[in-house]
Image (cartoon, rainbow, N blue to C red; front, side, top):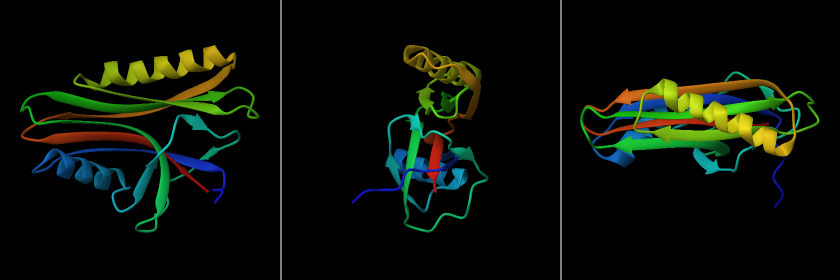
Length: 155
């Protein structure tokens, strides 16, 4: 089966607490608006010409391609952050590059690292960057928490 190449994308993020790390991750996905789908983790290429869109209502149970970062912790007081960055090429005939990063650290540093990685990846490809977009979410864990940030690909 050949799957159609995505033509649009949106960025999603959320963090939450839960009774287990998996429950916290599930709640973070719900907060991000993708919790009732089956995320299919993909590597980090944004197809050429892919356009940003507002998050659509996703069909429950749909297989949804996503490049994402996630982190969880059961250490009260620990800071956790998930971030994604997209380097968009100057020439839209080239693909963009998505980089994911997570850490037990504040948002600013984790998001900046994702952006730096996207810039470096495009440099390795010899592709000029038009713009870098990013999102991140941070949580100070109360009991058991999770953070999620992703680029969701769609048609």
